[in-house]
Image 1 (cartoon, helix red, strand yellow):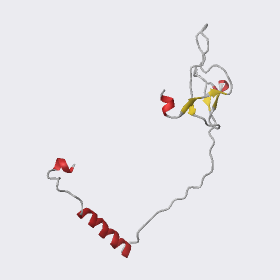
Image 2 (tube, helix red, strand yellow):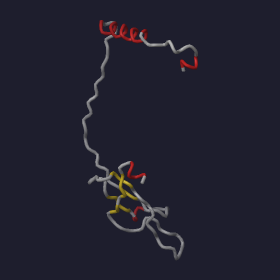
Image 3 (tube, helix red, strand yellow):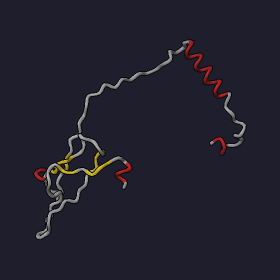
Image 4 (cartoon, helix red, strand yellow):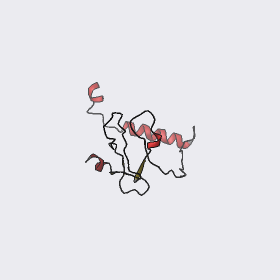
Length: 113
């Protein structure tokens, strides 16, 4: 199943009920919507059917609470000071690497591409 390959599982509603309301007399309401959530997750294992939030659509909104945690993400930025000895050494290293590239098999534009 495709859901399995993404580590997803079928979610079950916290409240049972139809998710599609028929506008045709004599037709039954039905539950045809599916939600797949993260397999084995205790936070993301249930969704709610919100029949009171249905407006002009024949479908009821489905809702899930997704927990959001504060997390500090440390970002570092490495720079080389312009005109420094480190910059000079870096440029020499780059030039050396370019010079050592084997280009003997590149004899036309197509091979270069």
